[in-house]
Image 1 (cartoon, helix red, strand yellow):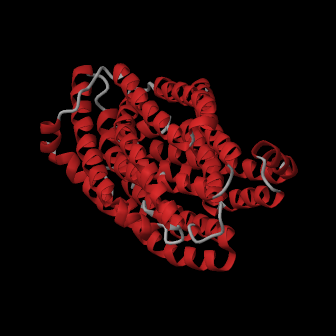
Image 2 (cartoon, rainbow, N blue to C red; image 1 turned 90 degrees about the horizontal axis):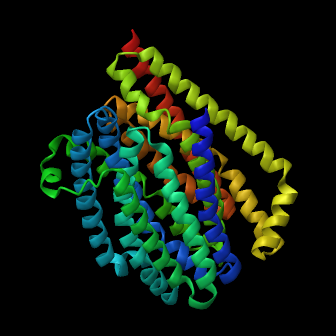
Length: 423
């Protein structure tokens, strides 16, 4: 309990610094075409990072969790993981960078030529930062496997706060380009600090290339996740066709929900996930089922409380958005409503992490991918209808519906899998 509170406090500060950065940008630059281009540029690096990190985590979290007793073996395994991260991250980022002039007009059909050029310019440092973020995610996985939760999160928090302070100083004079450079420097610094605590596991490209077991485990996720993890691209496709500022409004609401989901994931899901592999290794499937159910129950109760607070404090939230961000009343209300409609996404962003971690602990990376692919295909129709009927609100509702359907199916499959092992 004490550890969970400490993790929650550190992660909350980290995420508050992150969202404060976005709020500072909106207040100084304003909501419009420039901020839409800035948000749009973050899409491709974020999607790539999500796809690659998900695949790497599926292979390396269970593997590192059972090797923590031997430091030399743990460090050697990290070197292989770092090598695979560099091969994937570096290789894919180079390809995407070269294809940006072709991809940007396809992903953002509602942007004019000037906005497209701004997106391409903004994407360059963000793609490079993504390479370091992928390596850092692997280091975080390794530190979590040894129950060093606080160290990894504290480093990220410290870097986020320092970056925020610098951005506040330079943004008014140097613009959004300075923010991108600062974020790149932050990614590099976080990587180097986590390397120190992880005992400097230098990437081993040869061993990484030859590690067939982890490549095999990652393959279905790389193929499948490359489809359903592109959901943000679908969102941006529709949002680019909304009125000016639509990308920024939706992104801010999604950032708020993502911030809350990250806090809940660190507090509720993260302490549980390393134990799943240990339950399975010791054939304690009843203990696994109990731990899984308790995690889902905690997530559900917490999200219900958040929803109640949002409605109870709606007038205060609207006033705060108007005064802090210098927004019109209608924009503030749009942000609030989109956030409300994304509550389903919030629940599944956390509960889904728990469910997927159990599948990974079983060595099953195919089932979550299959469910994700089917759900993603269905979401295309939902988002089309939602956006056409209700614009930003419809897109948010469709997103929540898609996520909730996925977790319901995943729970059914997982319950049968665990019950099968018990019997």
